[in-house]
Image (cartoon, rainbow, N blue to C red; front, side, top):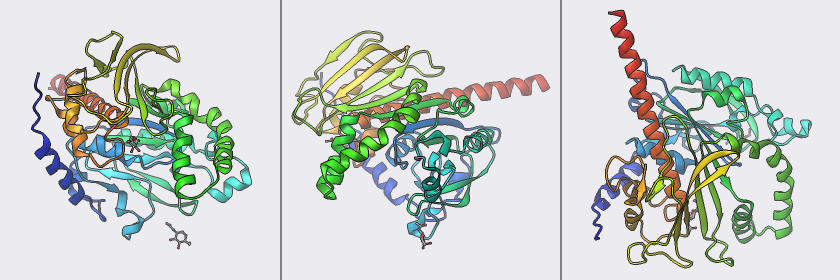
Length: 394
Ligand SMILES: *[C@@H]1O[C@H](CO)[C@@H](O)[C@H](O)[C@H]1NC(C)=O
Ligand SMILES: *[C@@H]1O[C@H](CO)[C@@H](O)[C@H](O)[C@H]1NC(C)=O
């Protein structure tokens, strides 16, 4: 079978619209933002749990472009552009709130308390709950800002509701009240080996730190991470697990990425390979999907994860050419794409973003498509309910 692809031109157009659409200042009050939420429409809330570092802007971009939006940048333009230091990313479709903004104490305060930022005692869960609830009801909130540069708690910023609200950070699923407001929950699980390899690459090779100091800083974080972050895994509907490759034990760079998809989640059907419910290991033809050493391998498995039934989609290795991904796409079911090749096109449109040539980009893209589907279903259900009400009233 010959797979032809014609998405290249579209993708290039999208990518350039993307960079020129990046608005350095004055995003607030932008007309695109105001038209985003229709009267009576309420946002869906996506939770994304990830270790340190908000600004998973790649995922935000994948979500935004999946919805057809393209304006994406820091609220108020960000500090560098004469705005304020912010962790909030906005687009015409989505707002990403960094949960570090709900830290109880500033950096000096934590020196006094002696607790780390990972500790649940260092977060304001009552305020987090009130804000997520208000946004979900379509209300504007004044959210505090945790300034990562200076470690200070800065003057609050105004957050307007958008169709999709993403709350991202260390503890999105810890508080039961917040958890109950979340429509779809994701957990980005970077394995300790991969974290170590990344840290070695960055802190040792680029910043000249010693291996001992890197190991010590990882060890120091581990107890609080295990106590406060890790337990949230069991609540996630979709876990993106990032592991070292299995294809070559010496290879410290290539990744194996697994999307662990919970079964039975309302409005979410896990993506599968070839045949839903089966067990599959697949090495694609090298003529159709070329890859650098150590090669590429996909898998689809039925497993248990914290007692829940899950469907796992795996990609081990990198591919050379995103366009060839359409070969994989043609064998993915429940991908939630609207037309053949849409996933490949989405990957192409963000070709310069991290993970575009491996499983992290593919699984993030599949998650973004699932979120769009979830949003469409919820919006359709809400419209139906509203129509019924009008009919009853008439
Ligand atoms: C950090 O604090 C200094 C001193 O108060 C201030 O000049 C600077 O603007 C702050 N940086 C950010 C990014 O807010
Ligand atoms: C794979 O994904 C990671 C994480 O997104 C990214 O940093 C990396 O550049 C990608 N490519 C390779 C060759 O590992």
